[in-house]
Image (cartoon, rainbow, N blue to C red; front, side):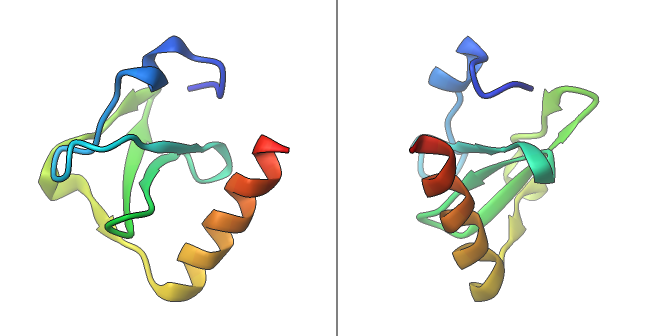
Length: 72
């Protein structure tokens, strides 16, 4: 999945229905509100609630820094 993929505009977290951010280096979509990471396997986002992986505080900060750097 690429950052300019139009699918990103319509994908949402299955739990809070909010937007997800692409983490290309992690091959994952990230919900910073719930600290959940959803894997992308063979280009297909795995958006089942059970697929979400809880992210610890250190990874959360690293992801936020990465996301801020990619938008500037």
